[in-house]
Image (tube, rainbow, N blue to C red; front, top):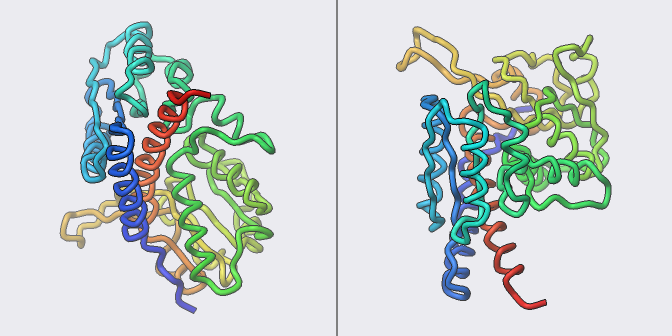
Amino acid sequence: MTAIVLDGKAIAAEVQQEVADAVQRMKDEHGITPGLAAVLVGDNPASQMYVKMKRNRCAEVGIDSFLHELPGDITQEELEKVIADLNSDPKVHGILVQLPLPDHLDEEAVLKAISIDKDVDGFHPENIGRLAMKGREPEFIPATPYGCMVLLRRAEELVEGFKIAGSNAVVLGRSNIVGMPMALLLIQANATVTVCHSRTKDIPAALANADIVVGAMGRPEMIKGEWIKPGAVLIDVATVKVEDPNAPKGYVWKGDFEFDVAKERAAAITPVPGGVGPMTIAMLLKNTLHGAELAIKKSQPA
């Protein structure tokens, strides 16, 4: 068996085209252009790169983007004032605070300050709380887990007999950004979910019966191919730069899975790069569109 490779670039392009079409309809029918405000604190090169990528994708689908570059020594009060102003700005339908923030800032308080109607990252405590409660729907789903679910739905179309509902799923990693919301989304989709982490005693045993494995540990090739149940669907969230003197650039990108071995046992697998990464930005665009839809709905008479 050689796994189907779930092409995140191609699937993200489909999502982006759907968003672009919907943005154009919104402009034509309502005269409104969705707007995303990106808040960048300090001069972290990785954060600058990620924000640039997100703004480029916004431009491609017709979403306005507004960059707020703030000094690394900004105070908590000053940062929360910027967010308050964006909350009240009618041109802004989504607010993205690029993480991580400098150590002196209270990240949780900053995320909580974002209006729940503009929380396109899905990190507001109320959105996460709704995700965790049966019968409640969050306004926004965190973009990376959201993208992973889209990839799993595509696997349902491509892999004979595979369904999320009823599957045994293992999520490796318990971060607030990926691992925990991913587990909650899989539970919502009626999978039986196990979460593994750095204190898990026997990860191979946990994976032995897993139909779905989501790797979100950020440890290159930690998940050995021989641990994978034949026919499993593998979603690799990690993207780690690994030095390789034989590579043209002197390095390669690796995920959590031992890809070359795992792909011979799995039914489907995401590549690194080109798997989950493009989906994250695509779902952020979709969330921003949803923020604009919420604004239109609230502006209409009851």
